[in-house]
Image 1 (cartoon, helix red, strand yellow):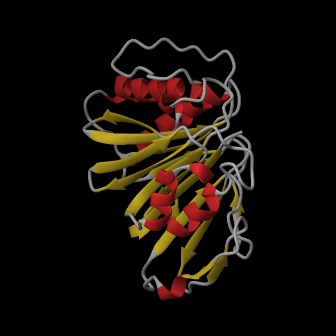
Image 2 (image 1 turned 135 degrees about the horizontal axis):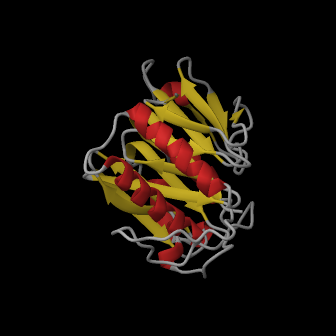
Image 3 (image 1 turned 60 degrees about the horizontal axis):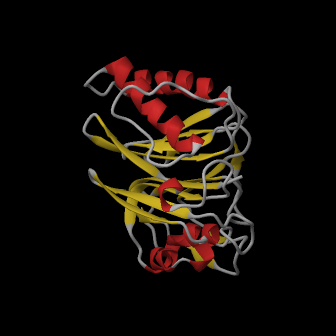
Length: 254
């Protein structure tokens, strides 16, 4: 299956360290070589990069490793195709607009006999089950709440209900963000770590690389990293329970 990486912080932070280890799973330390992508929120805008090449071979991935884009919400994905051909339009994450905000989505898993009726403006461009599920989620939220974004408790409750309906068709590990929060759901495998004061030196599991976060942060910083498989060997990663939806706000799980 695919690999997911998300970051949620209380201050704009770069994801270079985590992405460096993550990108190696796109064809070097793992077999996920059918494309990749990453999206960074900056204010109300989104920087969105996708490539149908393997992450280890992609010049765009090299750019991301060397260019420290700072963001409070990031979603990245490395693809191992189960539905849809290897093509740029099928690379996650996907982006749509709802309530005057960009929404970014990525999915790990395989959905069977999932064929919702789409009758609004949200339509897939590619032919993956993932983009179809994203469009259905956006359509369902628009139908339930109309033109006005709901408060967080109502939005979370709606997403928990809708995500459960999608997950009934198979594996639905997913990440979704509108730039204010990061919504994450686990069917089979997700884990997270929260980096906060006192910061430690972290060591990547996919490359011989470490960083002392105490040298590049302030005592007030909080950074949550959410990923399919732990990225480091010396941090305490928390596993999601199957079926669990966790919302990350300002670097903390809610």
